[in-house]
Structures are given as C-alpha cells and as structure tokens.
Amino acid sequence: MLTYSFADLITHSGASRSEIKNWVSKKIIRPDVRDTHAGTGDHRTFGFLDIFEGCIGHGLNQLPGGMPVVPLSLALDRVRFESALAGSPWRAFHDPETRDREARFWLCKLPNSIWQLLTAPDKGAALWLLAEARTTSGPAIILPLHQLLLDLETRTQDHASDEECVNAWSKEKPRSRERRDALTHSTLDQREGRA
Image 1 (cartoon, one colour):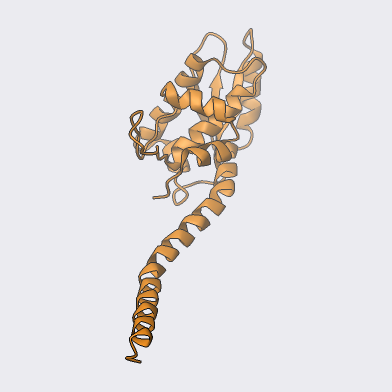
Image 2 (cartoon, helix red, strand yellow):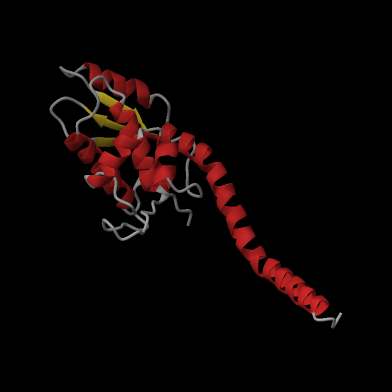
C-alpha cells in the first residue's frame, strides 16, 4: 500500500497548506494509515483515498465564496459512505483493476437536498444532470469525481516510482554495508600490517 505524507497531501490535492491543516485539524480529512497525537513526534500517514478527499475539498473550495467546513465534511462523508458500500459502482471505480473507464460519477448537491453521488454509464448523463440542476431554484453544485480521480492517479504516478526506488534502495542497503564493512576490515588489516 502506498502511503503519503502531509506534504504529499498538499502537493497532490492542489489545496493550500492552511486549507489542508484546517481540514486535518478539524478531522474533515482523517489519515487512514496513521494518525498522531500532538507532541508525539510521529507524522501522520495518509492513504490514496485521503489524498483524493483533499482533491474533492480543493475542488469544492474553488466555488465562489469557498466551501464552509460543515457542507464540505458532509460531502466527504457521502463519498466515504459510497466507498464503503460493497457492490457500489463508485467503490468498483476507484479500484483500477475493476474500473469501467467509461463510467461517470458526480458529487452533487441540488438546492434543498443532501449530497448525492450520481453515476451513469454513458456521457449523456452529464446532460441529464445539467437539466436536473436547471429545474431547481438556486445554485447546484456538481463535481466530476471520475475526472478528479483519474487526474490524481496521473499525478501520483511519480510518487509510486519514488516509493519503488526507496524500496529498491533499502534492499541494496545490506550489500552496501557489507562492502563498507569489508572495506573497513581491509583498511584495518593494511594499517596493522596484515595485508
């Protein structure tokens, strides 16, 4: 499982440091891998879906006037709920191995309604969604989750490569130590005249 630091959360989500710090301190974004307590010296560790939640928060915060904390929290709770449902089309979509690349998902909030995660197998669903939004009085919020997720996967490919490099490097460490130890012993032998 790939893990991400607080700095990675900022980098990959596109949100500012102060936004992420606010959302994490208010538990709007909760580290899936490891949370910490103040002053422990341990760092929070986030999973891929935490980074995705940061992208959603950033997308919603781009609305005129931003997104207040409570509606943002409710929006992310809806996405978490759909992610946890067994057999949910959204859950199948965020797993690259079970993904239908043609599927479309939108996080929506029409006036006087709750957050919804809508799905449709074809691109004509966007037209339906816009028509539905026009029939309501007041502003509708529509965020294309499918596109956010695919963009995030593209941005985090380098992170996966970095982690693979770290793993490869850590496998090389023992051999490096052996060479260093061998060099140290030969140097000692030379100094003591045993070589």
